[in-house]
Every structure is written in structure tokens, then in C-alpha cells.
Length: 181
Image 1: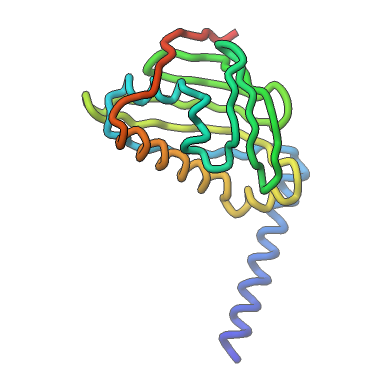
Image 2 (image 1 turned 45 degrees about the horizontal axis):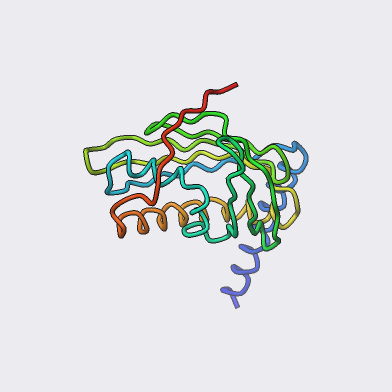
């Protein structure tokens, strides 16, 4: 009996905290952020070169169906967001070989961020992902409150690591630079 009361109390408290968190986010219209990093056992140029193969993203990003490179600085994405398929366009605002790639959405799902590459040794690289996004629907806000985007980002980085280390080399490279406007 006591266990049941404790469980109900914990669920009620969790529900109140979640409700308050959702109200704060909804009221302010503020975006959410994710920061994740991973160490991959490949040289920095290999990690960077593979990341520039945007059309390969569906191979390691679970919810991504397609990324189509329109030109050097524009991508079109199609992915599941909180169980619903959505599409959006992205502009790459900065790209420095072996250092960083920054982007922001220009239509559809509001998001932006940067991926940076840090040399640990000649055969190891730390990849850091920082992303801001704005949950649009109640379901997206609920998933955000439970850390779904953070868990997905962590899983995507882990699958990127596994794919790249298993192969040992990149599938291609784009070494051009894009300067911030």
C-alpha cells in the first residue's frame, strides 16, 4: 500500500514539474539546445571529410530519411520529428575544413547549430555538436522535456563513430570553405 502511495506521489510530482517546464517553454517561445560530443578513432581530416557527405546522414541518423545537397551551401532535409515526417531547408553559413560547419534552417523545422572537430592525436578526433531547435507541437515539447533530442543526437554520433571506424576512411570529401555572411 505504501509503495502505491509513493508511486502515485512521484508520478504526480513528475507531472507537475513536466507541466511547468512545458508552460515555460511554450510561453517564452524559446528554443531548446543540445550539446553532445564523441571521440572517434580516425584522423581529423577523415572525420571532417565524412561529415561533409551530407547525403550519407541517413546511414547513421535514425530519423533522417533523406538529405539532398542542392548546392555548396544549401541542403533539403526530410525526417521524422516526434513521429511525423517533416521537411525543411538548411543553409550552411560557415564551413572551415577540419574545424567547423555551422548552419541554420531557412524554412520548415526551426533549427541551427555548429559541428566542430578537435584533434586529439594523429588518429583521434573529438566531434562536438551544438544545436538549437524549437519544438513546435505539444508532442515535440513533451519529447524535448524528456530529452528525446539529446538522446537521438547521442545515438547519431555513436552510429557515426561506429560507421567511420568500421570503414576506416571517408566515402568522400568537400574541402571548400564557406564564409559567414
